[in-house]
Amino acid sequence: MEHPSRLIVVDASVLPDVIGKVLEVKKLLASRHEKSSAAACKRVGISRSAYYKYKDCVFSYEDKLTQHIVNLHATLRDEAGVLSNVLSALYALEANILTVNQNIPIDGVAGVTVSLRLANGIQSPHVLETHLREIDGVVDVKILSGE
Image (tube, rainbow, N blue to C red; front, side, top):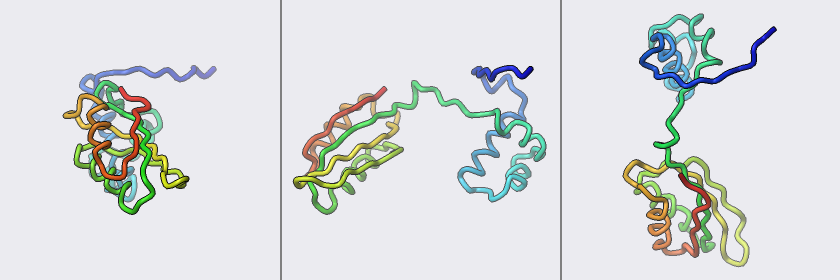
């Protein structure tokens, strides 16, 4: 009888080195720094069999307290460059944009929903809100959710 999957969080320092190396291989493959699992395994120094043994069971866990994920909705005027200026401002604030969804403009404005991860320097999503409101063409900004 197969046991149901059970997830646990364990400090990487107490795990065998192979687990960390499997995570490195997965990262190399996902970022396309290596084209094949064989090349990635060779680069980090593990066998392909070790990689395949653990690859579907080992995942990196990022502490939610350090992620600072924010979802916001902005109403933007239907003018060239407004969305680009918003994205540039987020970049200047060192926000990592995860998703952008822009609706078709109606009555001269378009709704845009953005999910992003804040940099460690920005403590409050409302700092973002204030900066974005100052951009020409931004009609409104609302924080939908944020940690």
